[in-house]
Amino acid sequence: MRRSPIIHPFLFAIYPVLSVLTASLPLLNPIQAVRPTVIILSVSGLLLLIMHWFYKDWYRAGFMTSIVIMMLFYYGYSYRLPQEIHIFGIPILRHLIILCFWIVFLSILASKWLWQRVRPHVITNFLNISSGLAVLYALYLLAAYLFASSHDPLINWSRPLNTSEDTEQLAETYRPDIYYIILDGYARADVLQEIYNYDNSGFLDNLRTRGFYVAENSYTNYNQTDLSLASSLNFEYLDYLAFAKDVNTNREPIMNLMLNSRVRSWLEEDGYQIYLSGEYIFAEESDPALVFSVSEIQRLTTFESLLLESTMFEILIDLGHVNISNYTYQTHREKILNGFADTVNLVNKKGPKFVFAHIIAPHPPFVFDQDGNSVQPDWEYKIFDDRQLTGGFESYIEGYREELQYINGLVIKTIDNILQHSTAPPIIILQADHGPASLLDSTTNTSCLKERYSILNAYYFPDGHDEALYSTITPVNTFRIIFDSYFGTDLEILTDLNYFSIPKDPYRFTEVTNQVDTTCDISAYLR
Ligand SMILES: [Zn+2]
Image (cartoon, rainbow, N blue to C red; front, top):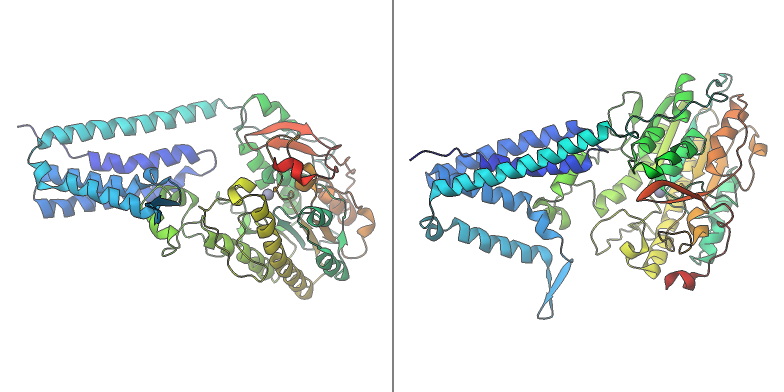
């Protein structure tokens, strides 16, 4: 009898890595796949040896190894069930149901009864061929993606030069530290009053007594985080990307605009060090010029977290016993708290410095009550800003209002720390990238644009440069004013405009400047 090689356990083990890699390639550095690949292959080999020691039969050892690998790694596919399932009226955790199913299935497959009725080399050949085909298919998808992206006009796209502005140079006369603090989804006071029934004037007064100018009628230029930040950090509109609306929806150009922004390159050229704290989207790409002040909650790379999401470790993560995933309510809380703490810690770093702090609050999921106690929603962790995913309109309003109050306290504490411990008066920008989304939908007509576009926008400008600020300023003009006021440039103020696009089609911009100030009839949007 010819012997068949036992390669299927390794092929089954590598398949999930390849498919997660293909799915995450546009956003992640493929180097992240190396460590998990090495670990997974080693564990599979070890498992095979243990099974052989136990069964004294390579065919059966290979078979059992593959079954265990499938159970561990393909668990997630069986996992996408509702949180709780009711059987005879008794709520049973889905993990329990799926686990029982797997244990029964595994026991049958592992039984001597079954094994005596099969031909081992036939089974082995079958598993080799099926796992081989699966891996080939995953490789085909990967190759197809790489081929398509090599022809993608957006992959190698770079920001066109702005000939009149890009030659400007910052004067080195006075170089204050600059803190750009983004509170993701922080609404303007009138929206908080109208929709959230919350009076935020106490917080704004606290800012004003500390010397802040609050732009009371500010709107964001774009309704999505990355577009908004790409625009504000380059102090220009993204019209040059509108051509892409009929090309595809690759977001890589937006990421590049955020990471290699004009604010960054201009300040770096002027001797500034760039620091990032909080959640800096996709900036884990290695970039020696950036200093990450992200406290050690990144237990795994993003790739490893995504990979783990479909494995059996999900149970431990869900039950809160193992805190290794970057995507849990607990890590979300830590990211928010660390974002503030890290920003405070950066105050002592030698200047001049630009501190970009991106805090994912009061953006959903809402994880703090007004006193800072942990809130643990009973649905799966998702970071999407959508009332449907946060328990509906009432739940969104309530959760948002609670978290906002706690965040307000953290903001004031952070500001006080920065002001007290800075050696020279710094510039502080406290800004939202967009408003909340309790009444947001996929079209301009079915969304309350005022809620989504009205933002918190407050400035601490030392040495009396406030006069350049105005109440309707939008983020596209933030750094124009800073550079003109403090660095002697001659950038003009752009007309404040607002653009709408949906996440699935980021470059199909619709100008909504005339619609963003319409007061919303809440009931009309909830139908
Ligand atoms: Zn955002």
